[in-house]
Length: 316
Image 1: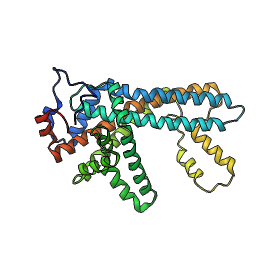
Image 2: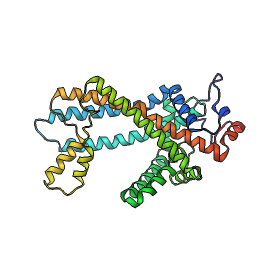
Image 3: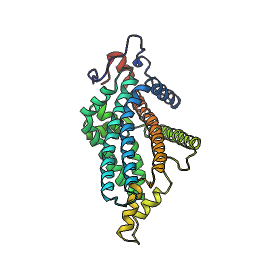
């Protein structure tokens, strides 16, 4: 399918990626992943910058509100506002991820694409993209509830891992995107699973090292504002309450709102949020570039995508 309305063709001096398309080993995927990110760094940072700005403004707004209300303790309306802002943030994140996926595919094919073009494509394909991801999350989430369903949840999580690319890049409907991903993964599930787990772990460790290093340098006692008790708080919330509705409300407040009482604490909190968002936004594209590369590797191995590109010069 032609993508000429969404991107600009590669310049005359740029070597087309299509000319060098070939099946990739794990080392090739890693090398291409970081090379692509480095070469199109401004593009990916520009896309992630949307979420960075939104997240920073929202967290600072909530932090200022918490400090202002600290003496009165009236947090009910603020909690509702925080929930609404976080839900909007989830939608913003979906837009950003979709734009990253499309930009990664176009960049891999050697095309020049702008931040605006990536978001324009996302706007046009958002509902199929959202639908495929909702179906993905619903099925995998429900299967994860029971121990017996966990193996199936893992199976479908990687069988449908290319649904976003099928919806945004190939233009498939929500259901068809899941089927398309299944077609590509079929016969190579273990390979997809192994490569993607390795990429996810690599990104996780790099991100963690960056966070810990910057926290140590700045002399902060908490890592990115996370005191490590989130799991325990969630366990308390979904366990039978022994302290009444007020205790449950207080636990939700601790999860949704930062624990701030002074303006000095707000300054430290702001630094933590800035660093955390910056690192998350810098690392966010890497995993999805990896997914995109594995997607094209599967198309090359199963469909002769490299031959198709040499003949037509455009993906189908």
